[in-house]
Length: 251
Image (cartoon, rainbow, N blue to C red):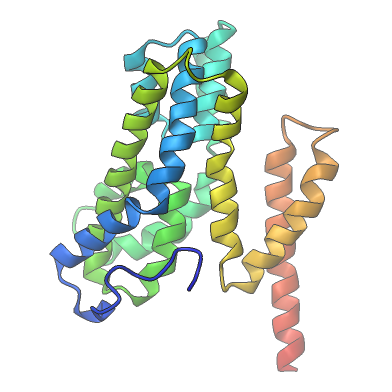
């Protein structure tokens, strides 16, 4: 049994999945552990959004429009300080720049047999760290013409869960102590760390180890850029070391 648990549709061979079964699989995966994790983290965001002066409709719009918790927190913090719109857009864009390699690695798997390429813009926006992790896990065994059905079912399900969590946290502000709200925000990245740690990919595991070493060393000196720097260094280190080990073992 892995971190994600047994497949709810393990009795159905992947190559024989119908469109309905792919959609069902996506929904079932979303209402498993992601439901609990996103409800916790997005409830915390809703509370922080109200404390930061956002109205409920703006908080919900940020969940749909930004669709990434780090970028949403940046949005709330800068809004609370009265920053200009241009600064908000730039800061949120930089916070979400980490999605570029995710988009580049996943969209080719969704583009197969796609007649209207414009749909890729919607898929790119709906992509989240959780959907990337789950899709990369199941897509290699999925029929190409069923991947989009699974992706849309999963992503729209977790987006709905996130909107519910945002509204719940916004309404419960005052009943949710700020230290608890801040702690709940960390549930999502910790879950992603566990998802990646459960990976069978040696390069990913090496990158996680490198990130655990580099991150704490860099953060005290560059808290604003530490995460980006750590991601580049750790990811590159994992790729290079894995490639060296592969070459060494084959020689």
